[in-house]
Image 1: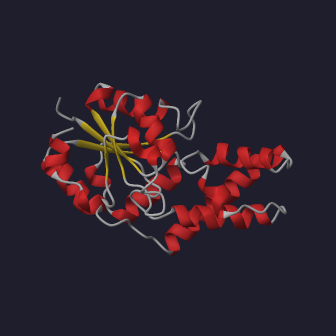
Image 2: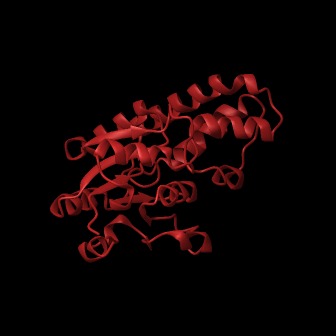
Image 3: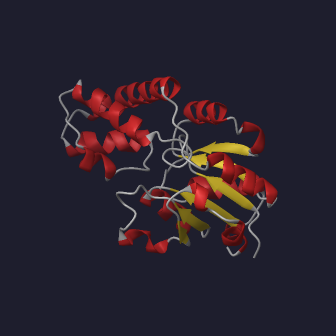
Length: 218
């Protein structure tokens, strides 16, 4: 069945913001004597900031009342870092051009706050090629729950199995597959050989390696 809609994750897929989220989380948590290692951070990649903060406050047995304060501080710091040092991922504009050529509608579907999504879309200059952007920020559940992808399909007026998601995180892939959508993953080189990506419909080392043949075979 022909793919009608492509849903693009943002952090780590369109822009190399995961290191910036990592930096911001470490800096903000450190202010409260909570020390988050790289190894710990990567276990929660793909979660909403709210759930990310809540999880680590519980893990470190810290005051959970700090959650909204830390969430806002981390988000604000990431936004500043992205504006100061935007780092588009290789192949972003190539992929957008390819999807347009195949007449596949596009949307950015992310766990990040809408404020951040809008800023990144403007930085990348792809806003005119998107039908809309969807954030899981205010949904009852974020990724790996499929809610944000199901909402995107509804907004696009397509059935889930006609949708293709591009993801870089394990939680994002789980959300896409739980929504009964196709999923192409582009994991970091450090995680690329992990067997956990076996549930994806295809795995790429870069968006630049996506082809018309691959998309038409979905």
